Image (cartoon, rainbow, N blue to C red; front, side, top):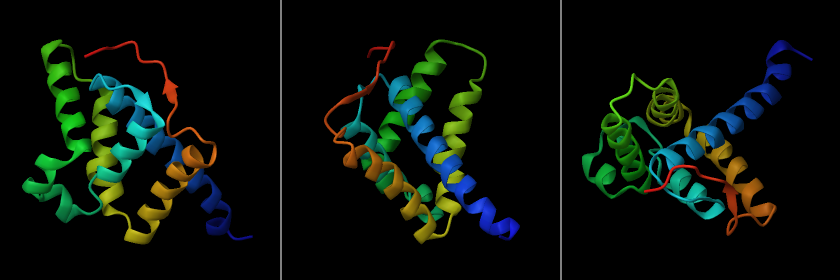
Length: 133
């Protein structure tokens, strides 16, 4: 096995974990229930390309963007120091994923959604949220 071949499983594991973790973080900070359905909705509405990140019309209609904006406002209202978890989630969804090749990003998203759906969790609460709207 080459180094690159050995690295592929790590990439998918790390990518799926990061995508799920950051999506759950955004939903929690936005005060949304963390369910399979809300997680899938957030993933499907996140920008898929750098052009979509810059598209203000799409951004205004996006469930992902609404959640990110609510989370940002809530954090600002708390008047806390910068939140590295928010910065990481923001970077993941607005820089890392949109910069990926379209097929790679879609496969990563489909992997996370497929696990949720395959386990029948799309209508289940996935994580308790201590923060409410």
